[in-house]
Image (cartoon, rainbow, N blue to C red; front, side, top):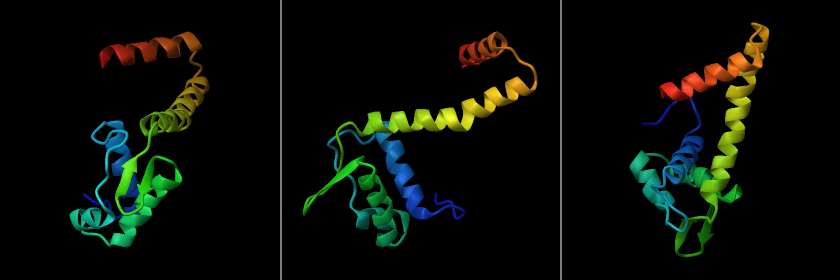
Length: 120
């Protein structure tokens, strides 16, 4: 389950983000404790805490002292906006660059995108 080629705390962060996007965790839901995450993934609790803290820093989850961590209001919306920007940067820009390089016109690219959506 853990990819040894990437920082584990980053993977913890991404797993929680995926759960928020997939609505396995909804606004106001309590997250497992860092100790529970550490036990489940067989990692150091400090590593789990680092992943969770990254989510706190982004405003996706919040702490209630003595109670635990909870999904923040608007977390899914923030994540979706972030992912759309990443999608644009990682996929759309290179796609457009390659389309221009091979002389593809805007309407041809649009038709291919429509075809791709229709085939899904």
